[in-house]
Image (tube, rainbow, N blue to C red):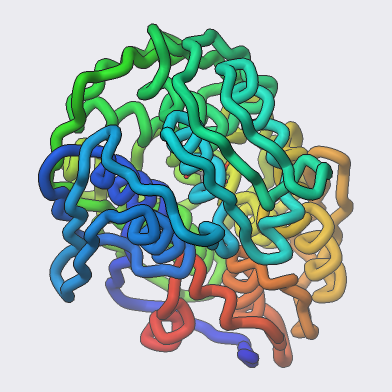
Length: 424
Ligand code: S3P
């Protein structure tokens, strides 16, 4: 449990942990590559550790040192049948991406996670994998994990995905590594493109055009060094904290600003934020910058359409920011929030209402009337890391005390989040 009190002046420099999406992919692709993949800046959060454990259970040697993670890949056909159920914990990325890989193996496997994971929709991957002739079964017949996957040679397809989801896209592309021709995916709006970028750097033939990307099964992938940038989804809490907390000035160093992830930066600027990017550079095939934020007078915005997939994980903290902006903010086209680690539309609305905010839930987002002062309250996180971190930042800007019951869930993506916050 954590009790958060109101603060003024957040000042200082910080780095945030490595990007969760990139860390998962580095382990997965490293396992399927030939030779060793050396990962620097890996996020040692519970989700990415679940990915490591799944590949260890399939015979991949993975060493962890203070400096790096070393994945000793065994090639595209080097995985071994796991002796038990693969435990994917709370991680949707592990589940959906690994399912694409398992569909192409010559063995059967079962994947299962915690209660939240096992209630998230998996039909979105079962459908395209089945079209590719894979056998993927929801063990309880409810369209969720546990999933039983019987690997086999796969058929190349073109898939028109109904959702803009990098997990669905990546699942199909990874199954495409084992297909009999070119596999492609078109999504309604472009989701994060880390899979395409990283598979290319491992030597796969991946092409992207608009919202469509394609892969040809490569003869081999080649192990390499990967430098994981700081996670913009973790930086988001400090970006918003710096903007809404009085008399603040923060520099967050080494943050990935890939355009398919950086929607929050545009929204902050549209809302009048004093935000600047410094020292822009490239690291590990991804654009990176240091982000400076200072207390700002914010105004409302309409957030909808193609930008939504580029800030989907940041919407809880963006909704909080809108409570501190003058006018009515509308967030639309974000129904996906209901099927994340929790129903984030309901939890964000109920918790912010409990703190005195003027916010209403919509089927696909929120309507927020900014400018009402917040007061502390007990908040419900349902073990969702992003809800816990959002309400820690809310608590810094609310009178009285904000109580976060299941605060330990931040381990999923940001194990030392509360220590970092205190250091500022
Ligand atoms: C992720 C994709 C997104 C995101 C998740 C990580 C990824 O999920 O919310 O935190 O690493 O591919 P969806 O694909 O369900 O949108």
